[in-house]
Image (tube, rainbow over the protein chains, first blue to last red):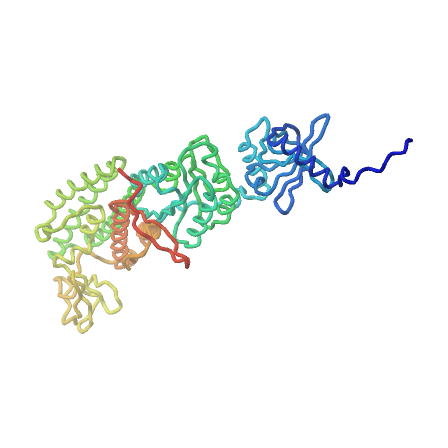
Amino acid sequence: MRQHSPAPDDLVLTVSELTRKIRAMLQRHWAAVWVEGELSNVKHHASGHVYYTLKDEGASLFGVIWRSDARRIRFRPEDGQKVRVFGQLTVYERYGNYQIQTRRMEPHGTGDLELAFRQMYERLEREGLFDPGHKLELPEYPNRLGLVTSESGAALHDMLTVFARRAPHIELVLVPVRVQGDGAAEGIAAALAALDEWGACDAILLARGGGSLEDLWAFNEEAVAYAIYDCGTPIITGVGHEVDTTIADWAADHRAPTPSAAAEIASPDREELLAEVEGYGQQLVDAIHSQLDERRRTVARHGASRAFADPLAYVRQRAQDLDQLVTRLSRTSRRGVGESRRELESLTGRLARVGREAPRRPQLRLESLAGRLEALSPLGILGRGYAIARSEGDQVVRSAADVEAGDRVEVLLGDGALGCVVEETRSSAPPAATVESHAGPQSQES
Amino acid sequence: MAAKQEETFEESLERLSEIVGQLERGEAPLEEGLALFEEGVKLTRRCHEMLNAAEARVQRFTQEEDGEVVLRPFDGGDEE
C-alpha cells in the first residue's frame, strides 16, 4: 500500500455530521412519498408512538408514527395487514437507519373505517360488551323516556312525531348532544352517564338520522360502547337507516333500525292501552253485575215488600242498561277510540233519558267509561234517598231480626252517616233501621 | 283507598287488574266489594286521564357545573 498523506482535518466528517447530511438529503428528496407493503413487527408503544416494519418480498423499510399522527388512524395497525403509508423519509441517527416518518396509513383493499369497525367489533365482543345476558329489558309502561340526540336533527323530529301520535302521555327528557365530529363520542357517553345517574328515566333512546359511515362514526367509538354497557337504564338505539349497524347498536339493550322505530318500540300504543283499560272497565261492570244478580235473587227470595219494590226495579233496569252497555262496548272495542267515545256518548244520552236521577244532576257529563260506571254504581243509589244500615259489628243489617230494640246502628247515606238507636223492630213492615234495600245479605251467609 | 296522585300508570293498571280479579272471584263481602268497585272505577278514570294527556311534554336536560340537573321546557325541534 502506498503511503498517503494524513487526511486533512477540515475534510473529515464525524459520524454524526455525515448522518445529519444524509438525513437532510433524504428528507429533502423524499419529503412526501407513498409506499405500499405488508406490516410486520408492529409495536404500539406506551407513549402512543407506533413502530413497524413495512416489507415486500425483496426489501423492508422501518417506519414510525408519532403519537399525534397515530391518533388520527382509525383502525389499529397490526402485523400482516397490507397498507399504504404516506410520509417523509428520515434517518434514525443513533442506529444509522433510514425510516419513513409516517403521517397517514390506509389499509389496502378495504376501507379504513370498515377495518376499524371490524377490529372494534371483535375487540369489544371479546370483552363481553355485546353479551346478550347483560342486556336489560325494556319497560312495558314507561312514564318518562330520555332522548340522547342532536337538538336540531331529523331524528328528534321523527321521534317526537311518533310519540305525539302513539304515546303523548309519556314525558320526554331531551339531552342535546353533538352526533358527529370531534368530541361527539365523548359527549354522547357523558349524556348517557348523566341521565343514568339522574335515574328518573325508564329507558333512554340514543338516536341519529342517516349519514355516511364517517358521519355515524361517533356511534362506533369505544367511549359510546362502554357508556352503553355501563348504563343501568335500558337503552334503545336508532342510528342511521335500516342498513346501518353501529357498535352502539350492538352494545345497546335493544336495537331499532331507525329513530322512528326506536320511538315505536319504546312507547306502548295508547290505543292498545286504552283498550286494555276499557277491558278492565268491562270486567268491573261484569263482576259487580253478577254480584247484583245474586243479591237480586236473594232479595226476591225474601219476598218483596213495597219498600223493596223500587230499588229492585231500579236494579233490574240498571242491570239491563249494563247488559246493553257491555254488549255495545264489546262490539265497538275493535274500532277507533274516537268512534267508541262517540258511541259511549250516545249511550250516555240514552242512559240519561232512562235514569230518573239525570234531571237532578244536569251538570253530569259522562265522557268516559269510568264516569258511566260510577254513575251506575249501587252506591249512587244512596244519593237517591236510600240508605244502608250497619250494626255495630259493621255487618249490613238485612233483616229486622238482625237487631233488637236498643241496638245502635249506623245508617249510611249518600253524603254521610247517622248514628241511630233502634226503638222497635217489626218483621213485616220496614222499620227505620232496616230500610237497607237492594244491598242484601252476603252470599256466603245465605 | 283512592289512587294516590303519584301512582304511575303501571301501578294503577296493576291495582286495577288486582281489583278486577278480586271482584270476579266474588270473595269480598258486600261493603268491600262495593269499595273495590268504586276504587276500580276511579283507577279506570285515572288511567284514562293519564293516557289522554293532551300533548307530549318535552323537557331539555342540562347539568350545572355542580352536577345539579336542570329541566326546561323544550319547544324547538318539532315544527309541525
